[in-house]
Image (spheres, rainbow over the protein chains, first blue to last red):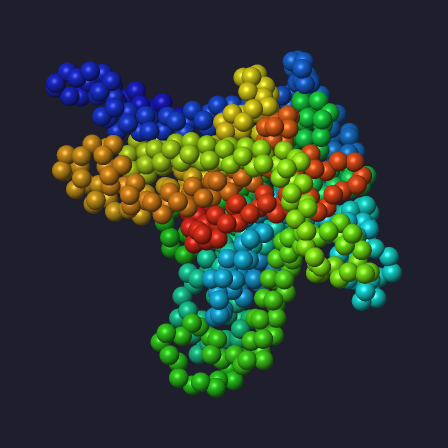
Length: 317
Length: 296
């Protein structure tokens, strides 16, 4: 990873020692040696595939046939493809709605858990469960909860007399979108809540007490003390949340596989469908690469948001 | 809010709660908390109750209450364990998770120590790149990785997963361990250096023993991440005997139009239990690794 380990070979010691030994004993040589295992893994299975993915996006590779360079043909084709455009729209919609809900509900839950509660650690532990359990397996439970005939939600609502017929959760485009978003929010709330709770616990209570003595209302304390002090951690948490939501694959793959009529196809699921069952590796890679600008935007947004806040608070870096 | 019943502000007060009356606390704290906990836990309850329901009660909501079970059965679990490849999938998942966690931890310890303490030229940039690597999602990498895995000739083998999971585990573990190493005082290492210890001795005898909580956090988290991994396992594995639990349950237990919900939910339950048990023993480590990764 660092080309500078060559500097280590400079003959700066009077006694001539074997080159290898001097290399290992120098700061950069040892650093290089320690970085080597991780670097080998990451270069072979992360950096190289990332580059290869970009390259594949410019080729017409299919499974079993090496492709040739076709320039921007994949992208030109995709931008005329209504299914791809729908997937982009779905992804943005899914990410936006789910992230906003996760943030609002997660912050609410964090504020509740920050109160003085009996069995606080117990509540904190069970609240995190949805995030610990494998997504695919909890999505299976949601699949059963969303069953078109035997959904428990439909059953309860029918018993209460709110609806007359079972809701077709995953069969109707609008309902399917709402259902997958609900399942994603369910899984995402714990992460947001517990991370924000950690942030809340770093806010000194003396600030709140001082504000109360000055006559601040609860809402004023929330907007003038809690939120500003929480902003740096909100920026990071939401960046992660947006990243994970934007590239979500498992939930959709289990619940709808992109259906009905592609209403829930995300870019990740479309990329998988075109590349692996469909065999069009080049096209699938192009769809995956098309996600990168969105992800970069999210990262930069958080990075700069974070920096500004740190600097405002008189921190370093 | 300020209807103060207790005028004495104690020093050990946990904030403003003493100003709240009980009815207000019920409305603002306990009621929402109950709803949150109910919604967050209901799918697990539903999973568990379905797994032990006899088939005739499973969809007969009129004669049997859907929320309870009369005469629970182990039939679904017996079917799962003895008539499907489920035990094999569990074993595969365990093997892959343990192996990739160990590999990642080993690589991460060295990398984090080098970045944080050896401070070679470019250590800061390397640290930043590690963080960026953590942000690269598997959804972007799986196609080229499938290509590579196929060319290397490890397609449809557990080795393919053991070698590719570290791509998301190493950046995470390194990032986490960097934070832990940073918290170990420099003076300890300096005094060891003065006493003539080598770098290797410092790492194994001074730094690592002090970083054990960090190692546990990173290890548990890495294990959970690889246990939960889905897209690589789905893409790289095709034969039933090499599948992991999430992939196996989804692709082999779901067939045709008749879903065997009992067996499916039993499969989901048993696939979740190992991580849940591990998590319940190490909640604090888990939480600290999650929030630690976010905070830095």
